[in-house]
Length: 193
Image 1: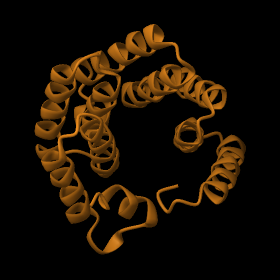
Image 2 (image 1 turned 180 degrees about the vertical axis):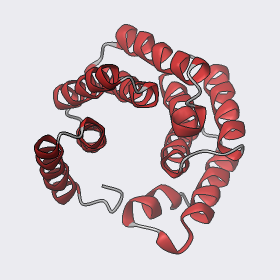
Image 3 (image 1 turned 30 degrees about the vertical axis):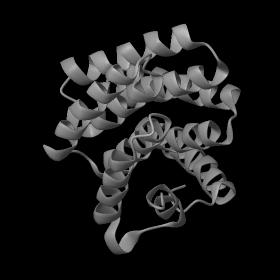
């Protein structure tokens, strides 16, 4: 998916789901569903994104994995916003944020959840505050996917706010993080001039 070839990524995610089912790995199924949901969101397919995100949450609850529940709810909030159901998006995002705060999963998904909240924020001040908290959390240690998703959403929000210095800052930070492993998708999110 991060290579920017969604057709291949979707095929591989569905193949991964089949393998996960065959070997009985619900965690692997969650990872594959996350890819499916991300692709659906990027393609504007709210229905598919909602369905796959709800499946992530259901599986996470079944296996007792709050970190996966947090990112499932985060993805579901994005999907609900895409569908236009902003009340449900805000409620679901609040649940994801509560898991980040209270279940010790901030390093796994915290910055990503905070940046998603900035996208959903009702005011510029709220968006900026969420991004500031996410930046602190990101710099204190977070799993790699946070660097991409946090920076990507921060850039989107800051473009909307026309804060070009901060857009450039986040693009530079993303470029430094990916270094020689840049992909078309990460380069797209870095190319802001």
